[in-house]
Image 1 (cartoon, rainbow, N blue to C red):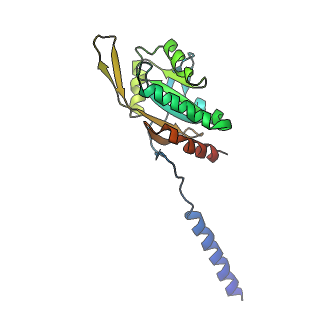
Image 2: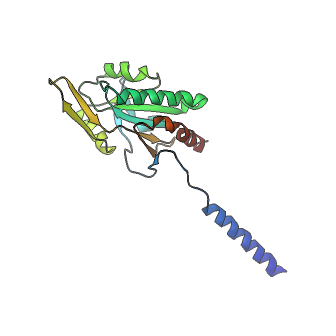
Image 3: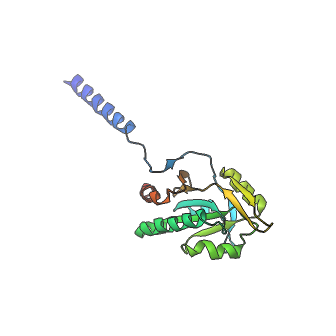
Length: 197
């Protein structure tokens, strides 16, 4: 009888261990880049003149996008879609922070960014720096950004990576969202918010 009880206890332990290892991995709609060394942090100036780092937004799910104010289509479309995501999150919208980093420090002054980014949602934050700071942050995030000459020296555009990086509430990069897939982000953000509860 004693052997039977020991065998039964061992069986329960094995079943419990098996259940732990078979717990399903978190599944996202967008590309999971958890554990990546992309863009661990930055130090830039926001559109109100304050120096900011990623750590300032701990406790929120952060969507970070690179662009420029004179972008004719991709940047305003992405910001509008991110505003829709925030709205669709309802009461959880205050746990979602959008950061926009300019790739055009020459034209995107503090005043220009203050008039552009918060127009999509007053909580959105625009970040800028001098050329060296922007070069460093684009390199850290593996973002492509190249000036394309226009008809005159002041008239140019910038080809750039049109993707969004998403960080969890602990400041860890989790997702890579391709252009055109922003609205699919709602389910993923809800999942990241739920992880923090």
